[in-house]
Image 1 (spheres, rainbow, N blue to C red):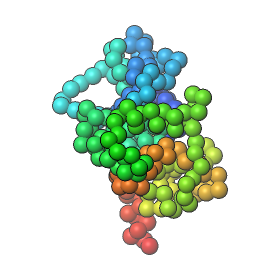
Image 2 (image 1 turned 60 degrees about the horizontal axis):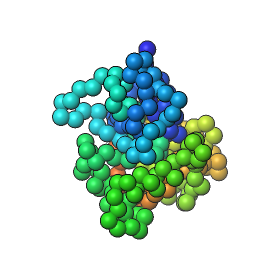
Image 3 (image 1 turned 120 degrees about the horizontal axis):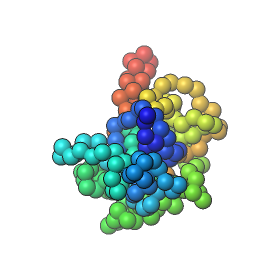
Image 4 (image 1 turned 30 degrees about the horizontal axis):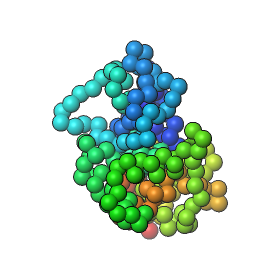
Length: 214
């Protein structure tokens, strides 16, 4: 029976046998005795994206009174849900993200807590996922941005919308007029400033296939 610990681009946490490329956390939000989630979906404004393997350390998922292990298809999914790179296990990526975030948002000497405070305002609307108007047409969004159209989430790569699923991405139509931004605007500006998120292989394979056939 899979645990309820897989995060969607809309920030929901569900049970599915799929895992993904990254783990992460929002603090302690589970009961270790039952390995089930509590009523709350975060206990800290620092929503992190971490490596699934680090220094050979092993953890029993949701088995201790420590941070609650969550899982993401890829980094774009984690960004869409409102997470950012961890400064402990992903220090180089976190520093690159902080530099791009500062550049994109016109700030200097930004600290992790400053990023967390902005993201917390941008990712939630009275406890639910906040959606934002698109700042540009879909085709002009940076690689790694994610949008929501109806019940579907889409990743943008090379101007192409790819439909998200727990198993990966697929090609599919999108109602561009109904699309709203999932990725927090400050993170979007970091992507525009040059941060390149790790994408699931299915995304890069699809785009490569389209480019070969163009």
